[in-house]
Length: 331
Image (cartoon, rainbow, N blue to C red; front, side, top):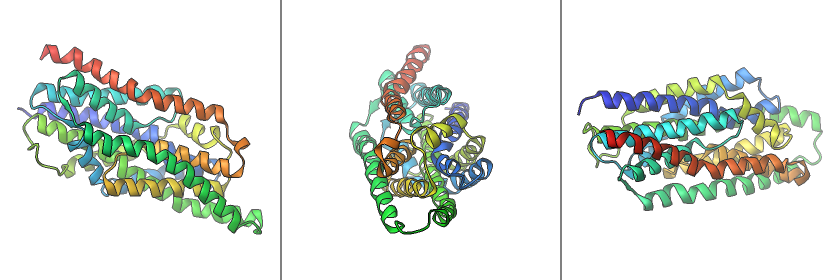
């Protein structure tokens, strides 16, 4: 098959990656901006740089997307599945960004792949979907919530006799490190996923053997650059929701939330599990807020976010399936 279908998938994949960048920029910088540890533009610039660097450390996640979610058929149907999955995920990203809801680009993409594959008659690898996606999806926010609560409780105990002013200043400096770590983890996770879809498109067009696990470095590099650009553009609606809409954060809480979330992202990336950076940091924010006082958490906002999370799987999956059902009969 010619190269133009691959070019089409690459263009659509980069569009998804850009929306992923500004949609999920809040994951890395919202807490640092909310606590005034960093100015908005410095925070976004730092996040963009660390996203770019982190992308090259997350190859195992790209391999999971490219090998363990769907068995892509060779030919036009396979290309359609790739394009439909990306369009479904991009549509969901834009819709939830417009509503200011921090949903998961990861789950939108994986749901899009599964929905498009089912509609196109391809095989969904349910075991890989269960082990590499579903189980980590459930565990990561639970660990984020509990980890954030425990770490914040430890911070309260360690600094119980410290003067609040100097302590806050020290944690603002520490947040530069924790925000960088969070952004690096976001790059490891999210820059690599669209590269995995490009790898699927190469299989569908006959330019890559289905048994090959490595993802092309050029696809990863393109995704990394575009994710960094999208991150610097910033999704201010979601930054406001995460930074101020869930709980009022001070610098120690911001540091604890970012450190908890970054640790989970690194462990997940090491195992090749494509988890949601959004779910992880949101759960960590809920945990650190609860550690101070459950009454300080805006549970109404948390319920709205949870509803958006639940709707992500059918929303992106059905959108991708609809595109597939329209296009495949024409092929």
